[in-house]
Image 1 (cartoon, rainbow, N blue to C red):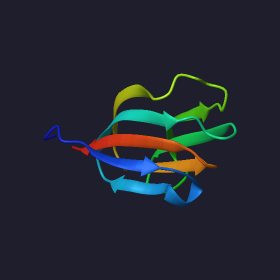
Image 2 (cartoon, rainbow, N blue to C red):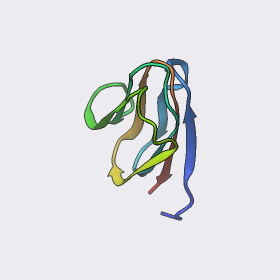
Image 3 (tube, rainbow, N blue to C red):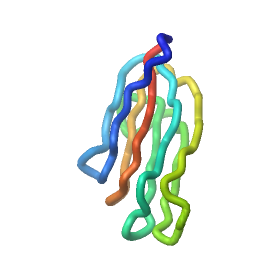
Length: 97
């Protein structure tokens, strides 16, 4: 990997989907602002909204620590697919292997 990360800013259900196909690494997920109500963000090692689950993050509207980042640094093999359940503001950093 060349250690340059790509990113996607996900602000809601319309911004989710397939971010990249093939092998790569999920570097970080940064929550930029609290959602208006509790929401979930689900990440799959897949080209679709199913398959191997990387993780599910619950974004609570009452959390006051924003922004914050979760470091994953995990490899995916098939692709990186994101499912956003509702309105949110998160940035996902990932790279190609």
